[in-house]
Each structure stands twice: as C-alpha cells, then as structure tokens.
Amino acid sequence: MKINTAEFVISNSDVAKCPKDFLPEYAFIGRSNVGKSSLINMLTNHKKLAKTSGRPGKTQLINHFLINSNWFLVDLPGYGYAKVSKKTKSIFQEFITDYFETREQLVCAFVLIDIRHEAQTIDIEFMSYMGESEIPFCIVFTKADKISKVKIDSHIAAYKKKMFANNWAEMPHYFVTSATESTGKEELLSYIDEVNQEVFKNNSQF
Image 1 (cartoon, rainbow, N blue to C red):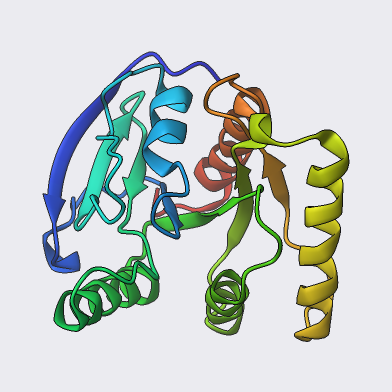
Image 2: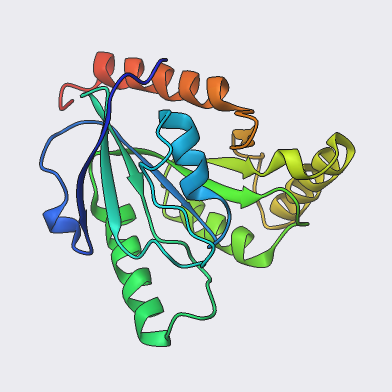
C-alpha cells in the first residue's frame, strides 16, 4: 500500500465525538516515549503529522487521521506514564477503555513496544487486557535500529515466553520496525491493506 493522502480530522476525549464515517480504524497505542509519533510519521510519509516530543505523555487525546480517504489511523495516549497526575491518568484510562470496548469501526490495534528493553510487565498486562476483551491487535516492536539483531531476537523470545506463561496459546502477529530507517514500513502497510480488502469484501457495514 502506498499512502497518498493523510489528513488530521479531529482530536477529542469523548468516543461519542469520534468520526461517524464507517471506515476501518487502526489504533496505535503503547507506553509513553515508545516512538509512536515517529512511527506514524514514517508510515504516512509526513514529518509532522503526529506531534513528536522529548516529553513523554504528549498525546492526551484520541487523534483521528484519514488515510487515502478510506481508512483511519487513530493515535491514542500512551499508558503507564508516571509523571501525569492520577486524575489525568484515570481520565486517559477511561476514554481509552471506552474507545476499545465501544468503537465499532476499530478493526485492529497496534500495541507498540520498545524493542530495546526486556519484557515489561505493564506491556504484558495491557496485552492481556486486550486479549481478555477480545480486541484484535498486533505487536509493533519499535526502535529496532538501536540494538543488534541478536538482542532483538532475544527480547522477542522473552516476550513469547512471558506471554505463554500468562496463558497465551500463541504470540500475536508482530512487526519489527524502525522509524529512523523505515524498517517494517512495507510489511505493516501491506498488512493493513490486506485487512482492509477483507473488511470491505466481507463486511457490509463498511
């Protein structure tokens, strides 16, 4: 898939105010400072579509971007950032949960994980929530240019082991990416394209 157009549509903290268009949505979420904005900008060929910041916790709203006029990329707030207030964090959690559990247009979520670190409990817990809630998702390992191929394989293996220990039957589909080197771009966009084709062919709502 080639992204020809990518335009910002709306930011809000109320799922009821999300776009009414019945187009497939792909939500991107991860711990703060995981490289989400950089990844989105790399995928869409826009340097400033999603705002990047050295300050974790920058994204605090549900952000909708219309891609190629036929699907939405949704940028969600990061989870687990310690320096936002408890009140702010609870608000985040509330509308993130509302989005995942009520948004009919959501086709797949991409859970972003910084590949530089060994398996983090907070990521495992969040993916367990997604699995228990039957929300389709894939894992996107980010910042692959920062460590060696050996370490990448080792860290992915550690995630597999930890997920199997948490009663997963198999590892979710995953991608290894680097926003700096555009690693994984073609694979991720091809996956979205394939899912879109299936969605438009088999679901009369879209």
